[in-house]
Length: 238
Image (cartoon, rainbow, N blue to C red; front, top):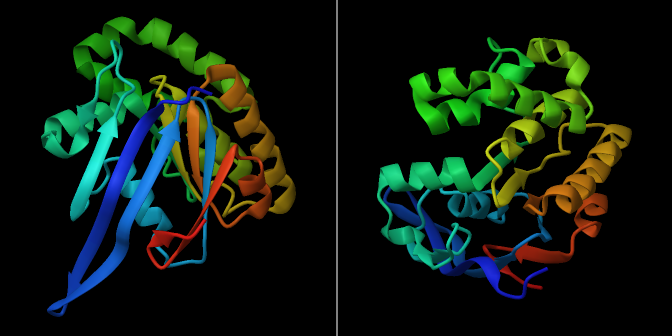
């Protein structure tokens, strides 16, 4: 694991406004993500874990603070707070992957089409068509790696919860991101299926060298991480 963080955030604050009141959710978070590590973030519901993940993954914007990303080819620091909407969307598509508790697979697409979605966004319609044969091969290899290649032409509704999450992980990895953000990835799975997913995350972390940031209530999953951060009331307490 490289000592220089691939991603650093400092003094992250996120406030929401409701009925004229300011509701602080994150209260000055500092966090580093290192290349190739598994980092878990644990804490009770409502302490701000998912909010932090959304900020780091550029799905939302902090009220204040700084976010510096160092994962681009050629190196150098990218100040994410200074990026426009298009630039943030491009970074989110190319550099980050996402796995959610409820999978978010599109029901009208097959499993392999869901896995291909990030490349459709990356290349656009015409280039995607020209690259489709090689992209299909890549998607099939990923589905084989996560153990569901036999389900590639199924609709998501025909998959078990564990199989849907494996499809979501394959989709998250498709554009070869540097960091995959996982929000309660085992929260909708039974214990045995969750345990198999733990092993898969460990395997993929070792095989691809991708960093995983896990927001979880699952203490067994959190225990697999190289580091664990505990959040309470919008700040880290350990």
